Image 1 (cartoon, rainbow, N blue to C red):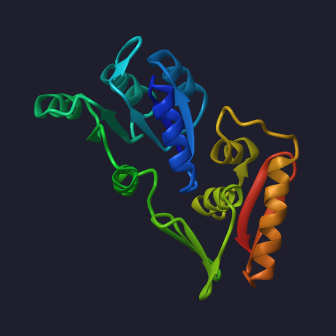
Image 2 (tube, helix red, strand yellow):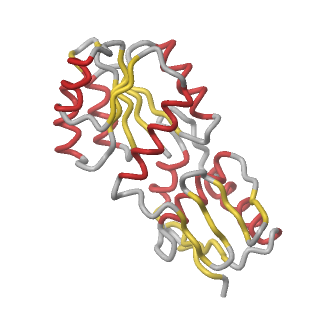
Length: 224
């Protein structure tokens, strides 16, 4: 899952990035409305965590522009303005959820998972191909009755391929899903992740394969 955090407090942004990365999430940081719009125009995100008090305006003003760009993307407002009137205003402006500071990371994660379940772009919650099962809610993969333990990057590759099983996924789409825009990407990094993932699928007895489409990307399918 790749999220955009629109937050001008660098300490808060750093803490959230560290916390969410432990749950295999990619977090891009935009410190202002202008940065957020540029990020949304150039990258694909599964959700937005939005502060209100930004240096170039109220974060709520971003929501109509988000809807114009990507109408279905979930937006959760995260702000110190937590009274009833402010929460109502945020929801009426189009926010999908509203969480007041201070907050527990576990509650933020639960709210994000709930939003993803309601998003039409995220269903279904489980993908099955052959004896491989990927649960997008728990973000766990199993082959038969065995759990497939993967480091974060490989898990994100498998998650992206599983969402689009049977369809070719372009390299650029995979890189968008696996790396934040501040990450340094070596030319062969994605191929290395795919190679290690292939080996682990083979070793655990999965009857699926990651097929390379030269010059285009990868395809998750039943093994031939």
